[in-house]
Amino acid sequence: MISKKMQEAINAQINAEMWSAYLYLAMSMDANDKGMKGVAHWYRKQYEEEMEHAFRFVHYLEEQLARVELKPIEKFKTSWKNMAEMFDETLAHEKVVTGLIHKLCDLAAKEKDYATANMLQWFVNEQVEEEANAAELIETAKCIGNDKAAFYMFDKELAAR
Ligand code: FEO
Image (cartoon, rainbow, N blue to C red; front, top):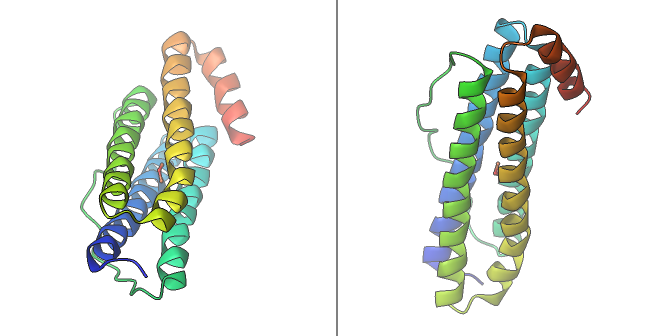
């Protein structure tokens, strides 16, 4: 069994993952409104991934016979100036999430909660990938600049995710 404190911390992380999901769904809808269909698709997939993250934690709490408590989702913005701003904020958001995962790891280590520490390893690795993906989007957007033909190709590529 996990501690009450760990149960609360994981419930907070479920909320953070769903908050991430909502944010990416908002980005997807904004990109769609702006005619960036591939970008919209990429963020829709990202939304689905975040919900999978949330459910990994839900299943873990259920396995540990701990209570899942769904909390209200924090407010977030729903419109972005352009894709560069969207990508920058995606990386910034993922860095926040990485920090949250690392805090959970600190708590698991402090409590000598080896089962939770082991479960969290998947998330530690996942965050490396999440940050790398966002950083790649930023780099590509920088290379594209105002080149409409290059953006068209990039948008098509993202649609294949
Ligand atoms: Fe669930 Fe993008 O971290």
